Amino acid sequence: MKNINAKMVMALCLSLTLMGTSVWAQTTEPQTASSSSSSSSSSEASSSSASSSASSSASSSSSSSASAAAAPAETVAKLNPVDPVPEGKGQIVFFRPSRFVGAAVSFSVREGDTGVGKLTNGTYFVHVAEPGTHEYNISFETRDTLRLEVEAGETYYVIQSIAMGVIGARPNLTPSTEEAFQEKKLKVTKAKATDRK
Image 1 (cartoon, rainbow, N blue to C red):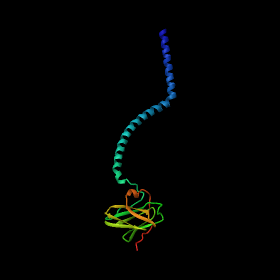
Image 2 (image 1 turned 60 degrees about the horizontal axis):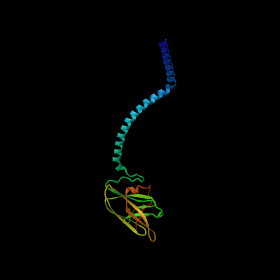
Image 3 (image 1 turned 180 degrees about the vertical axis):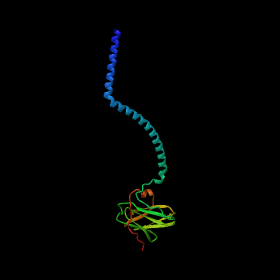
Image 4 (image 1 turned 90 degrees about the horizontal axis):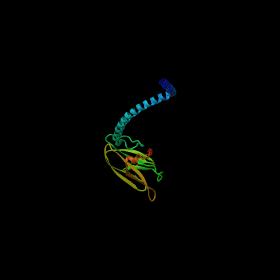
């Protein structure tokens, strides 16, 4: 009798346990499904992320090496457009950054007595020249002359600055760099150069 009672108690406990489990399973089924799907998706995601991280690290390393290889070709931001050098020629970019001092005054750049371009405040122009030695000058109170050895296929940069003289402004022409030219946005000059009479 004791054995039967014990068996009945165990059967009753088992049935109650199964009933509780089924009730719990019904109430938590969506969560279990979502958790199982999330766990499976997380495992898939982890595996895919591992593979993607491996591929991304490989691609990033290859892209970084590619960008590092491409970096020297495109290191300067192009704020001010300049056309390619004409075949068999050289070109000089004359530019004048925007400054408060002498802002109202414009200056003609000349080769000998012939005007090749005129710089107003915050402008630039491109002068195409034959290969060889060239002398460019600019004047107001005094004259400043710059000699350049121009080679075919090359672009040169010349900055025009202003110093204050006794009576008025003293413009200067100084060799410069593409970095300095592209530092700030400039306008292509619309002023016409004048020849020296």
